[in-house]
Image (tube, rainbow, N blue to C red; front, side, top):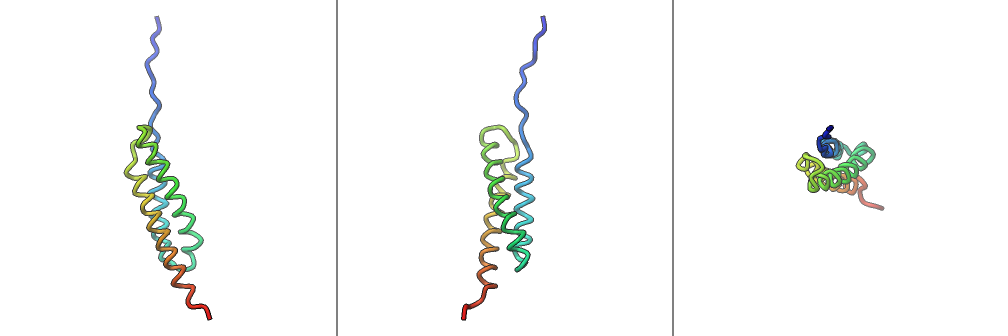
Length: 95
């Protein structure tokens, strides 16, 4: 009589780390005027999206890195705000 052990789905850990990395990357490049628009803006969007997905998975019990995911999403939001402020500041007055 063969008894198969119950297998539960393994938790996913990837999105929280990726969201945190993208959030830090976005925040670092957000302070560089020209490069920030091309690197930090897409990285901020990715950090927000991946962070929210990762946090949602952690809330459902499918992942264990909800803190990293949420931190990445918050860093992405902050970086997006900094990119917006730097973009407005570097545009200068219109004549």
